Length: 295
Length: 309
Image (cartoon, rainbow over all chains, first blue to last red; front, side):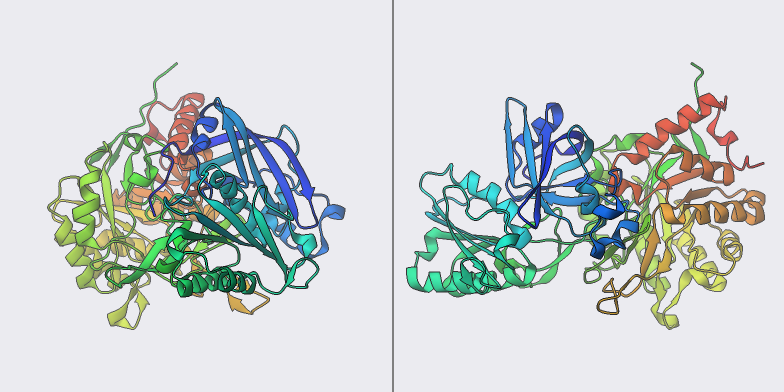
């Protein structure tokens, strides 16, 4: 996978355009970018990310803090948090970044309180991003839960390649936890653990059934996946069985996102030498070829 | 506006500012290039280099704590040979003195790294990481035993020839002045203090430590007041009389934090964890120190060192 796609990374203050709930689980945060930030993010690829400084954002009031997060509200955060984008739309140096997030901890509790006009600091764009491979006529997106957002951005990019058909398999615990029920212009298959929407079961089972039935030409097919690591390991295994190339978007706890802290190690195997070693999720990833990762 | 002289004499080296980036938080320099002018730093300390390449610990290696973080990276580095071949040539591009942090499992490993690097002009000196376990002595940390500190400091000083030697002290001791004294008596040119505090975070759902290594080193704003105290203690009890400069650090996020360290007795300061949040923190600290000096009519930065009333 190539190195950082954008060379113009930096620290930028951007302002909040909107921050609203979508469905039961997700919120959509839209950020206005212009000037140097617009320039830096204009060429950002799907799967790249930015580190958000949220320590300065306020906490919700006690009444608005879910009970299960009351302890987390007491944590003083200092580190930035990495987020990928569900959409980036920048023309003429101005535009917006869109993030979909779930409120799960001390940083996202603060994210929830951001309102129109608030400024936050972004460090990015970081990482390598998905690579859109030539000669692929079928792109299969496999998303699980919170892994959906960067694949929405990728689907939009893929729609610019007229010779590539894109389909998507999207899994979640239940239908109400999905940020969307279909991806624009993409045939979308939904699975839920509880069967409340679409196929009842794991997204991997649905993917495998489809591959057995439809038998796509492996050499012209590519799988892109983002979701819980256990799900991606399953997708990687299936991709291997069918001989289909697969890119995975990994997540690690990161202190910096810029390669300084070396915290976000990913155990990989060199395909030629068979040597194993660590790569960094922030710099060498977060997108890896599935067959180089040791899950 | 009156001019502030930010230059310092650091163990005989004239440095253009009193601000360093701390080992393990600034990579090998190229990572920070996008964000700041490395040439403005007083010094740059690379991440730890060992004789052999090290992959480092399994993940999680990082966990955030209240106003701090724990890390247990496990000295992941390319190894001294690859450092010489691939990283060292890049250092020529920056006009700042480079210090290579050295780590090892035995005294011989430290000596071997220092010997291999001693010949390179682009290296101003070494920082000795003595917070590593000594495998030959049953895993006791070098930096907690005054005798071992004496041995390792004098051995690396000899192996490094004319290079400046900074010994980085661990705070995980009963009396840091004793370990500081051991390093000074063994001939260290400067002290760097402090390294991280050994700490643990437990996942109460699984009842397991969060870090794969079980324990990690606590850094960040949470440790700053302790670090300031320890710098002041070592300055008063040993360093001042021995005329050995202290590179002080631990949780510095801004210029006022840095000025506290200088007043406590540090000749220079190092920026660590804060670079993870704002990669150009060191530059902002340099500018902020200059502003402070103007406001307080301090003409030369060294006037601040040990000026605690």
